[in-house]
Length: 234
Length: 177
Figure 1 (cartoon, rainbow over the protein chains, first blue to last red):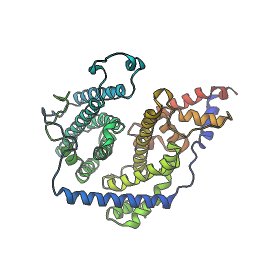
Figure 2 (figure 1 turned 120 degrees about the horizontal axis):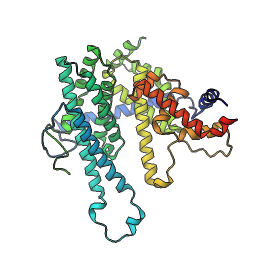
Figure 3 (figure 1 turned 90 degrees about the vertical axis):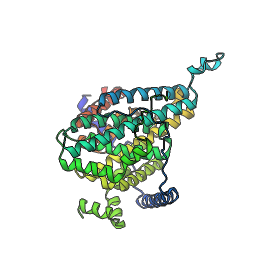
Figure 4 (figure 1 turned 135 degrees about the horizontal axis):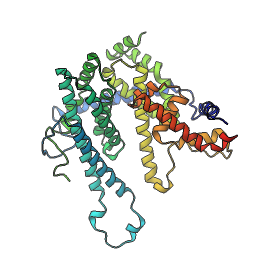
C-alpha cells in the first residue's frame, strides 16, 4: 500500500482513538464553580491570617547577586543545576541490585532523599531567580523601547523548557511553588511566542499582565533579591 | 455576543458571561483532554483545572490569538503535566522495568488495525502523541498547535511527520496489504 493511502487510512482510523463521550457540562461546571469558591475562600482566609506577613516559599540564604543580561550563562547554569537535580532524583528512585547487596556503600555514592530534595529546591530557586531577573529586564527593556525582544523570546523559550521540567518534578509538590510555576509558564509562553517585530501593544499587554498577575512580586517573595542559590548550597 | 465583549463581562465579574464562555469552549477542551488521557476522571480533572486557570488568568489574555487557541494552550499544558504525574506514580508503583505508558489499557485480543493503531498511538513519545492527536484526530492547525505548545508551526509539522512515520513503522504489516 502506498504511503499516502496508508496515511489516509491512518487518519480515518485515528479519529476513533480515545473517542470522547458527551461532555458532562453541568457536572463539570458545578465542580469548577465549587473549586473557585473554595479557592477564593482560602485566599481570603490566608490574607486575613497573614496580615501583611510574608515568608519566602523557598527559604534560602542570600548569596551573590544575580547578574542579568547573560542568557547563555543563565541557560548553562539552569541546565547544570537541573541535570544535577534530575540525576540525583533518578539515582534515588531506583538503585541497581548490586548496590543493594554490596557491603557498606560510601554515603556519597547514594544520595539520601534529603539531598535530592535539596537539589530540587536549589534548581527551583535558581530558576525562579533567573526568571525574576529576566522578567525585570524584559519589563525595563519594553519601557525603554530597547528592541531586545528577539533575544527575550529565545531566553523565554529556554526558561519555559526549564519551567516545564520543574513542574514535572518533585519541586512542584509544594502547592504555592506549583501555582507560581504555572503562572510563570503562561507569562514565559507569551514572551516566547513574540514575533521578531512585536507590536508595542502586545508588549504592553504582557507587562500589564505581569503586574496584574503579581508574578514578579511573587517571584521576589519566593526568591529574595540577590539570591544565587547554587553558591555555597552545594 | 462578540468574544471581546464576553471577556470584558467576565473580567467585570458577570457570572452569566463566565458560563457563556465556558459553554462556548468546554467541548473542545474536554475532547482534547479525553483524547490525551483516555480516561473520564482524568479528562474531567484536566478540564476543570483548565477553566480554573483560564478564569484566573483571563486579564492577561492579549487577544492576538483566539480565545480558543489560548484555552487550548492551557488545556494541553495542564493535560501533559497531569499525565506526567500519573506516569511518575506508575513508575514508583511498578518499577521502571514494568512501566507501561499512560493511556487506556487495551486488552482486546483482536489484532485489527484500530486496536494496533490505538496501541501504537499510546506508545508514541509524549510530544509526538500530542501533535498527532491535536492535528490528525482533533483537527487543530499547525499554527494552533504551535501556539498551544509554545513551538514554531514548523516544529509541529516535523513532529507530525515523525509521529506518522513511527505509526507506519509500528503498523508495517498492514501497510504492505
